[in-house]
Length: 439
Image 1 (cartoon, rainbow, N blue to C red):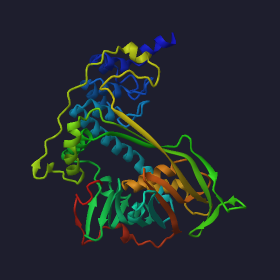
Image 2: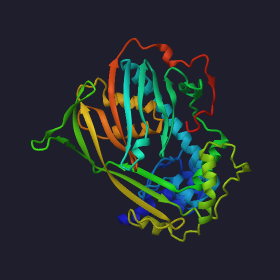
Image 3: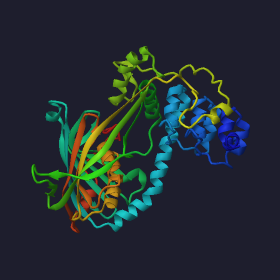
Image 4: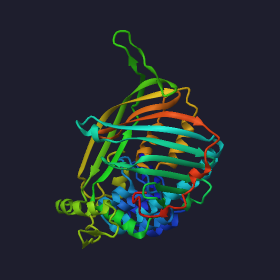
């Protein structure tokens, strides 16, 4: 009986499976639009995988979440790329960005209030990037980030503009968050050498959205995550004969060192939507687009937008067969997967200090503000782990398969003399909305 009840348990999923848009429309306000079935699929997952375009648009109009993964670890957007309908991919990208903005806006008042309650301070973070690949470590960058916080404002000064997939850009950059300003003016990046500034926009242009869709349709579907399920912490040891727990000063702070065991980087990729010809042809397009060529031209030639793929064969799986399948054994609903996965174990260490004046929660609020810098979002993911007692004054973590970074909180002081001018755009700086294309 319990199995038969599953057939009627997910009415929205069933409507989508059977292509019954009329019933879906009448039930959509009554049932949980984000509910997952036994395979971890939401109604939106199923609508995308089965090519039910009308249902996709109906679900998105009612706020179906886009950033959600099924048991196989794929989002509706990943499944849409596999299916290959350009309009669906474009709709999901727009909705994903809209939902991210709305979530940020919801958190923003609490974030600003928390920053106000925190004491004003100055802090320095040292970044050292290292690699086990010979010679690579010699050319990897290092950087000292200087962070000032006053009221609801934060300023970060750095010489490392961006670090992404073994490419980095040097400069003299300041990132300013003004919590008192409206969202469209609250985030600003200064290029102090060129005397330019760019406001970090919340909304992309149509051209940028379409460029992003081209990139998604032209590249592997990727999912990479640092698995923290099996992580344990053990005290790091020092000494050859008489072993003892490692304790050292990190800057002015006493710290206990821990080994982090069981940290695994899991990466998976799919490319069933790409032909061999695609893989060759798309290389030039990808290079053009990722260099910020938003006019869509490569080598002087107009770039033709990626067209929708021919849909995969119609699934002959029935609703009953689908819903009765054991969890994790989802019947194939789209293209045959072309799939590769890999995992790599990493060793990491962390030094925890009881003396550091800032708490981990306070640090998370600061990192949330500066997360547009990709390496800081990695640091935030790490700090969200259940760490040993204290504050992580020194962290050694992997950020790419071949690159680790050592982050040291080498200086911190609460101060009440921070210059308010630090949070203003200098009057002789000019606005360049495309200085940092990734922001």
